[in-house]
Image 1 (cartoon, rainbow, N blue to C red):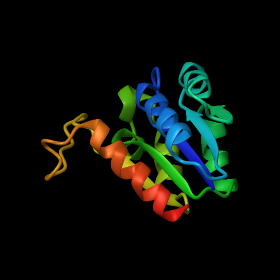
Image 2: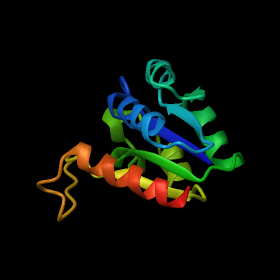
Image 3: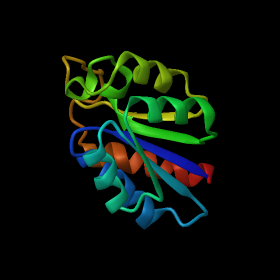
Image 4: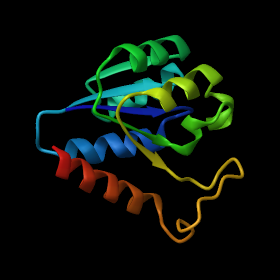
Length: 137
């Protein structure tokens, strides 16, 4: 199973997700860290990702050319200008069109609000993602 985790800035969410996957999913998996910048990629590699790529061109080529089963990231990866401007239109397009299951963390940012998520914490979203991946593994 190939799991890509995409994040930007310091990749705090990406690191948390990768640590949980490494700790809780005991099947043959490869985790690919897709950082919008080198710091984000390096931090996700430090959390246990097996491979890392960073920058617009590398992310877009990877999402277009590679076969992945799952893509995980914060809601900002779907929006041009998301993650404090680090998500380009090209990245948002590549994420949206990636042929895989996408787990989007509905963070309350960018003025985006998803009804039904008001009282949930990031930890609960990650719990659900890990549980669903285990079922499919």
